[in-house]
Image (cartoon, rainbow, N blue to C red; front, side, top):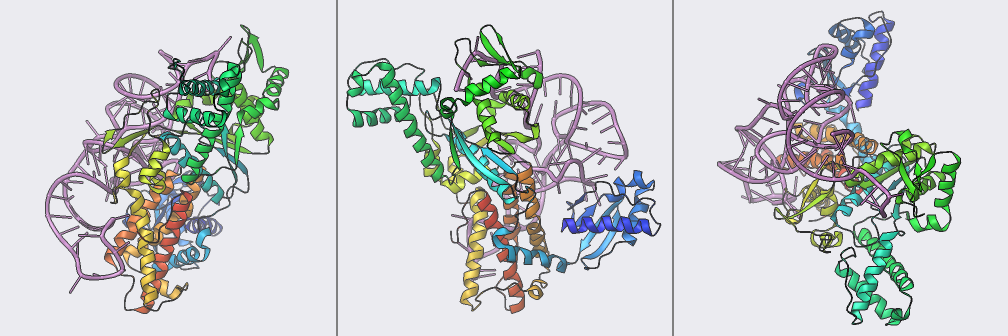
Length: 554
RNA sequence: GCGCCUGUAGCUCAGUUGGAUAGAGCAACGGACUUCUAAUCCGUAGGUCGGGGGUUCGAAUCCCUCCAGGCGUACCA
């Protein structure tokens, strides 16, 4: 609808120029927006103001010329006016909105789907938690943001791949193995000290128990290093299985799980370092090898190979990201915890130095989650291994509530997640507020069927009967959905969809309380059924994008 | 010290990328169930958009500066 108005305005400028009323046919970048105040119409444009320079005329006179040459052959504008410094305000006829409803009903699941992505190959990498322990609540937020962003990109016509990067190499994995091995020895009655830097959680004991169940006390006879590595391998695999299960429970699946170790095994990390050397992008200093990231916007150069010969995490990360592009991906989006933001300049530098454009790499930073219960902070200590896992949260409040609440804030703003509130079935809890709309409409549909209405056909004459203020407002809100999806994907901000759904839900509940759908007048009832079914489509599509279910009853 | 993020109603947060008189929810107060699900709605009240300067027709939004909070600044991952 917005685009239609925009085209009409552009066309009017050209016509006004042809008839001699405007000196220039040029139309600058104009805006058509939905004003906050109803008195300013359904749509308004700033075309006259931004054209003042080009046309060398006063905005209000330009506005007059444009209005005189407006070609409204479809008859959608009821009335238009010039207001304030030169705004063009358009008031639409209610019937102008009928095509929107028709589109929503006909396109059904596909309503809101666009093709701005043009099939571009994009990867969203998210969660990528180290396989040293179960996922916690913060990972859940990253999962919700990453998965929803991926969904939205798919809806906008991108060819999207979701990937989980497993940091299954390096010291932390060894530490994991050591932690398990020490618990294993304790399990067999040895009295050994369990160092603070080892992983403290109870799950380590369970993993040790698993090793014992399989191998008995055989590991005691092994060389220590071999035993630790064995424990590490078994434990990491078991933890990843657990992570996969948790994410599956959370409605998140990946196209690929990418192992960091595989980059060492197939020589990718070495190759990468060799290539950097050939291109003189690295140099040696103090026995270490440094990447000249400072030449590409980073604060300082960064080490890729330590003086002890070991590569840094940065080295394998460069290899990993180059691998992504070598696979044919045109654009890469990483979802990281906000505490890693200092890492962005060096990663960006590394990719630019490798010949990629900076538009090809984006990072979504996700701020931390404060877990509360009834307003009180839940004590969590990673060091002591006491933390509430994502699984705990899903089990307690459900996947739908958790996912939706994770998306009720901009991802860069810290989120208070209150377990009590997440379980409440009132409109303090936005999930139910939105889902309730879906359930209510399903109920109306069922009642309509009891009254002998089989299928509700798309009936334009009936829809033209929708003239109540609440109905027009609902339709206008519905019409915005595709723009919301597009903006959410463009800006990688899935919370926009969550807020939109709350707004749509609010408009529906208000309508529901004031007007009945199942009225005596069959034609009006048919029109209203079309309207609420359209609302249901959009609610369902939007919730699906966020990975939240749309229940038929509640 | 330097860098990034945040600062909007008592609380938690939006704000269509520069538009007209600043928007929700919660909390407070007052109302609405004989109806298609009250997990809902309607109304009242609540503001120096952290402070100050600048850019222009126009600023919560862009620039500068100051203040407050968070995070980051490893040959850690």
